[in-house]
Length: 153
Image (cartoon, rainbow, N blue to C red; front, side):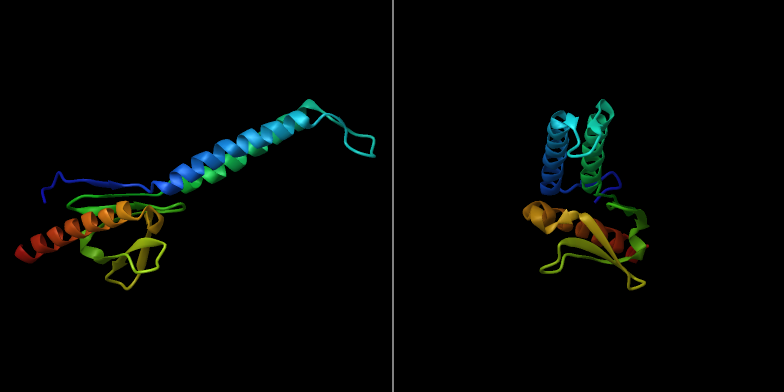
């Protein structure tokens, strides 16, 4: 592996689901907002334009929350790996990584570190099947190449 090899991995299925859900949320909340008019029930209040805008705003807010799940990605090269999960990002040199794991039944792959920590890589999800397996294999190749370089030098 050369120093210019770069592996970029992102989940596929969760992105499709999240973008579809985000669009559906905005549409549903917008439709609900258009139906808000007239009295609020048996009380003295009535729905105003601000109530409709607030309902659309809630739809946008929930859609943005759903899109947070499209954030995960993994980038790796000959020197290290950068993992960005839903919350939190990590940049690690290959020297601190013991193994790239994708255990049977696990929802996503993880990095096993020499300090016995496990760092989840949410970007490599079991739901993506062969795409995730190919990503784990690419990361393992980079890891093995770096370990071989360190053993020689």
